[in-house]
Length: 421
Image 1 (cartoon, rainbow, N blue to C red):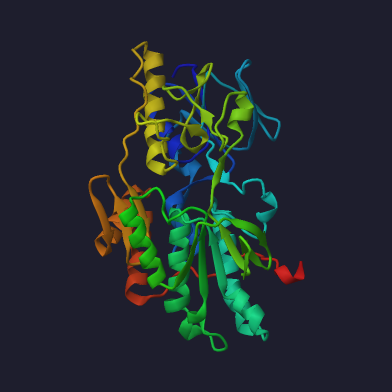
Image 2: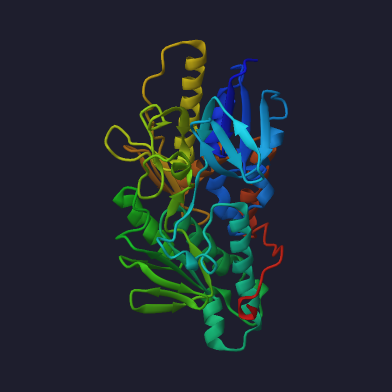
């Protein structure tokens, strides 16, 4: 093994793909992440909506690399990078030296300057976010069952999702199905079928990155499930009592934010240009401007396609970037010519609407409905890590499909009652 030190910050799709791509390269790799697990984010909303448990979509990073002596895993939070000294600083005071640095630190939800909304409108990026949303959704029904005031009960049974991208659409569809089909027989004082699920989108249509025909299909499918859709007007205020859309107020005790993301502070650490979402505007080989030994990938990077459109912040893009950087590092170490500039290969866009419908956009080929849902499911099972997780998720989906019962409807951990705050 050589003395070349590669520090990778972030154990998401891009970071893991990079580490996997450097297997056998003879370098010393240090992988740093704030959490001890890799998270399969595309299915995070299913944890939030009681379909899957946390262990079905997350894996301990140390376990993944237990048989890789070239990989050291550290649980830590990066607070800064000194590109001159080639060091990375951690919150616990530890300093890591590097020869090559790869920042794959991802993104978090953005409130467009209204961060005070976060406590009442959590986003969905981590397992903690998912379990928080799941608790709030389930507690809303429990509180409504005991509430005597009709107005308060209606507010408890109103769920508002802000943002109609894939996450917002998927959340709205599952919450509507949960309320209308899974829960009605279990409550005595309330009729959960009267639940309102409100989806708010500032733009003119749901799923704006999909073809218009698929977007229209998704909207009709959501409305068929009883989802109330508000388009063309942004949310102007969020509180514990509800949301304001323009001049209209909707009393809603459970709000979920799915309207936007902002990158990690990687650009600030490096002192390099960033776009409006805080992503580093990288070079064609995914290096940071002026820093040939620092690569930035995944949701942390702003990468442009040949047609001038940005590479989407999705898992396949991050994996492609991680694999590409591994090839660049290997070429440098072996003295071989550098690979051609990074080129993103779009493999299609997928989204589900409830448990029996989905849309898939492969470019020329567009699918919708039941067939698209099965293809969506098979694709996600394929990309899960390990046979156990694939079997477990497939069984959970089959059980829900046959019985209509969600298997992860547990209210766990301590949740502060808002009215007691």
